[in-house]
Length: 439
Image 1 (tube, rainbow, N blue to C red):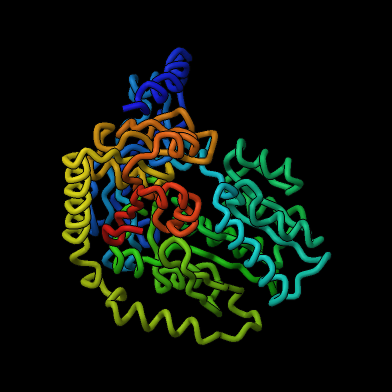
Image 2 (cartoon, one colour):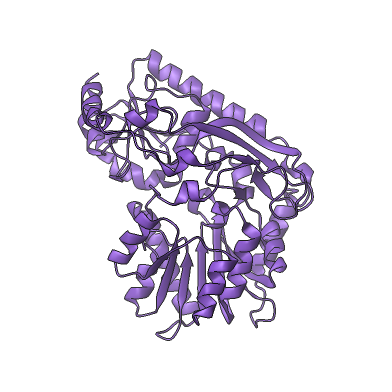
């Protein structure tokens, strides 16, 4: 097949580089043993996905040879007391986020989502030039740039120095730090209190969620608002979204668990919005317990849905693993059928969820020739574990594979529009989750 020489040619230059150590290679995996909220021993299994590499541990061929994308146990448990759903093996955050490959700005739909969020928060909470917006895990400034453009002071807290530099170059003030109680106290000691604290899609990435929420309470102004967006565990279960499970996601949340966390720090939820992002997310609005925000209907609506799904008791989390196995078997059978029909299969999007899908389904380069991605930091490297080459999107148009699997299925519409010329020429576009279907 024509792709192989080009892929090898592009990657071969990288093999000549000296294999250098990577932050995640030195990470020490330690069994959590006990719940990270209440300390209860973890005994109830939610799903065991075996062992996989870190989802964003993209490697050069030389680094792959010496095993810098080694696998770690990926087993999720449910605490039988507080019901936090969490990994039983924890990779230190410094080994994952100190140098990070994910950049939010490469998804146009996500950038648009951030812009709408900023506009809504400015209007709803009457933010102005004397307000302060702080975003935790602010990535490359994709969200805060909207507040800066509106003349509202903003500060990003981002642990990845390489990503923070991109934000700073965009004019978004950003400090390199992991957020927690100590970081929050340091900010408060400098007189910085957030009128709006943004913690969107970060809760799952925090090992010490209790310390994180305490930090929010410390740095949040007396009448300030904190918003938390996170994939809703209810949707993960309903739609078998097991590919959103990877080592960067230490925990998986319901509103009931988040409310427990908020109360532990003297905070409360006063509104909840249900969002379509990431296959179904919640946006929780929180404030200090004594603040004057009245509780809105959205809170009771989501509480009721979770209780109806029995997510307020350990038994409600049973039966997920067999459903995951069925999805994996269906995808394996699909790839086998494509191979038998001599149809070339490629992937679009070197996303973390794609890494989980490919590795837990044991997909090889013989079954998926390559994956394309718009992020130059990922191009001409290998998908972790399965070592499928990652190439620029132009390769897809050049090679015209008969079948494309869209790995970040939550962006399927956006990606399908980009691939419209190929689809019109006969290429079939598929997603594997929540069920195998043609787009």
